[in-house]
Amino acid sequence: MGTTKKPDQIVFNEEDQRYDAALKPYATGVGAPKITATDTVAWKNKNIHKVNHHINTKYVELKAAYDEMMEQFEYNNLIYGARFNFEPVVGETYHLYRDKKQEPFLSVIAPHECSFDYVGSFRLNADQMWEKINLVSRK
Image 1 (tube, rainbow, N blue to C red):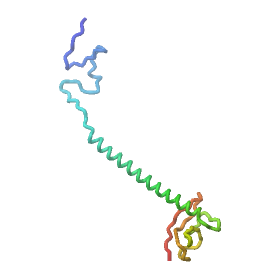
Image 2: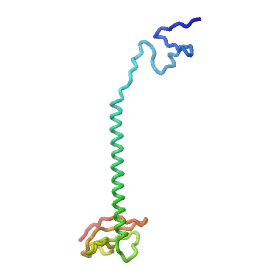
Image 3: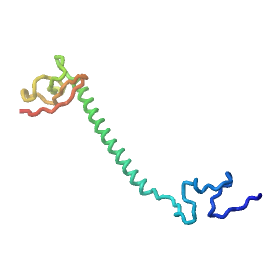
Image 4: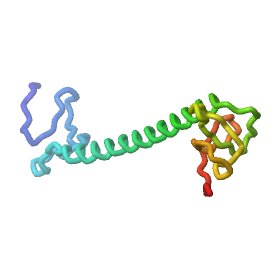
């Protein structure tokens, strides 16, 4: 028995020696629609834009958090390097000033009660970190 070439419209697998048109994941008939590669350029460009926007947004958030952390670090360095003659209490508000030599000092005296060179007001939190606070009024 010799092997004969089958017509093009017949789907015959030479290796398995069987007809397997029903097993193919695509249509095999002569009247089947043409198989063309999908143009994915528009889809890629749209999703690249979304991914870039997402990454840029995340970067801006992280940068803002970093800047805030660095500001807190700088204030903590300034306050812990300042002069004060008392042990600060967690949760209390203290005021940072500069003396005539531009040296920082911490005080319980509010800015409206004195004429010192006011730098800012801070509260010591439970982690022993100083948090900058905004006073409602400086009358």
